[in-house]
Length: 197
Image (cartoon, helix red, strand yellow):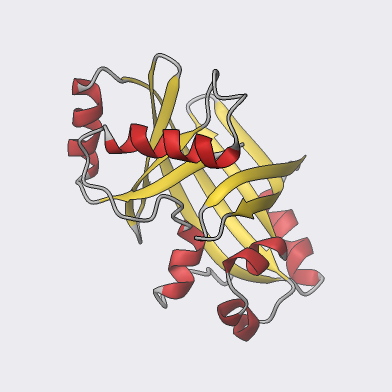
C-alpha cells in the first residue's frame, strides 16, 4: 500500500469547504487513538531515527466512528526511499477487545509508551480517489491519500508521484514533506504527549 501524508496550512473548516467545492463528497468522520510502544529506552527513542523506531514499535489503535469501534494491535512495516518518503507500507493487525488491558500488558513487560495521540479523520471521495483531512490537536491539519483502484500496475515510487500530484491539485496550502510522520513530529518538536497512566 502506498500513501502520502502532507501538512495542510489551512483552517480545517476552510479546507473541508475547498474539497466540497472541487466536487469531493464527505463520506464519514472517525477518530484514531494511537498509542505507540517500544522496548527502546526514552533516550534511545529520540536518537534511533524514524525507520528504526517504527521497526521496533507496536501500536494500540482504537478507531471510533458513528457505527465503528475497532481495537487492534498494529505493526507497520514501511519501505522508505532515499529521501525518507514512505513509498509502501504493510500493516499487520491483531484484534483485541480491551485497550486498557493491552496497555497494561505492554507496560508489565517493560515496553515504553513514546507517543499517544488522537487523529480526527474526515473522509472524502470523488470518483476512485478517496482522501482524508486529518486534525491532530497538537500538530494541526494533514491530508492523506492512499493508492486506489487502477494503480495496481504502477511501481511504488510512481504511485507516490501520482498521489502527490492529486494533492497539489486541491488548491490547499501544503507543506513540502509528502511523507509526514505525525508520531515522529511529536518527538522532533520536543513535544512530549505520552500520557502516563
